[in-house]
Image 1: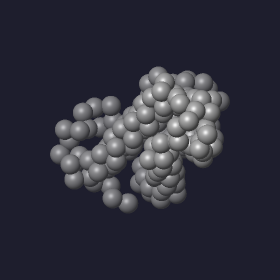
Image 2: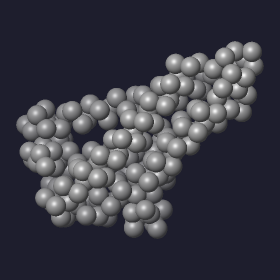
Image 3: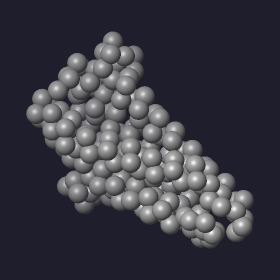
Length: 187
C-alpha cells in the first residue's frame, strides 16, 4: 500500500479532502479551475467523463441495492439486471485502475517526477478500492434465487462503502492527473 497509508489522514476511507501536505507536489493547475483550461476539452474531458459515469454507476447501484433492502420479498427473485450491473462496475473499475497503475501513472511519473508522492497516494487508494470492489463482487455473486435480506443488506453496504471511497478517490485523482493531461502530456 502507498507509504502514506500509515497516516489515517491519507487513507481514502477516512480522508475528507486532498491532503494539504501533498498539494505542493502537484502541477500548478491542480486545485484550480482546470475544467476551463484550453487543454481540458482536448486532453482531459474524456477521463473526466468516464469518472463521472463511474461515479453515477456506483451511486445508482447503491441506491437500487438500498431499494431492494427496503422492498425485500423472500419470494422474489433477485433483480438480475441489477446484479449484472454491479458486476460490470467491478470489472470496469478494476480494469481502469490496472491501466492507470501499470501504464499511465508510470508514464506521468517519468514525465513529472514531482508527482511521486501524489501518485503513491493514488496507488494506496487503488489497493483500498480493489478490496472494496472485491467485497461488492462477492456480495453480488452471493445473491442467488432465495437470497436473504442479509444478502441484500451486504450488497447495499458494500456499494455504499465503495460509493464513499470512489468519490473521494476520483476527486483527488482528477486534481493530480488533469493538470498532466491538460498540459498536453500524451505519454
